[in-house]
Image (cartoon, rainbow, N blue to C red; front, side, top):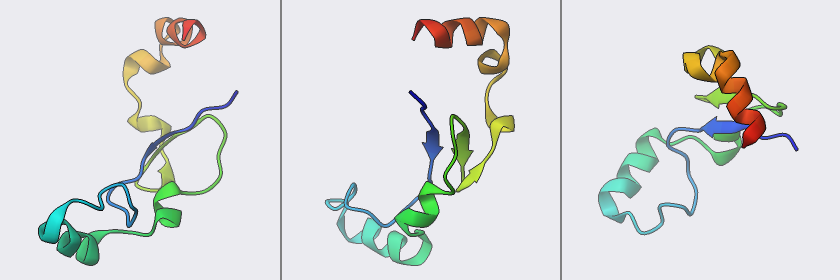
Length: 73
């Protein structure tokens, strides 16, 4: 199984449909489409701001201990 971790930012979606008028206004001004937030197809990568960005991972995740922990999970 391949798992991508996403940090899509603020996107137009139904996840925050009960957010009120302020959130609707902010989404109108700032949100990206869900397609843009999802980013390109990738395999087992960390994505932030619609781009693959493995440099944003913590040191633990990249370490030998992190790899061992991921095997256990």
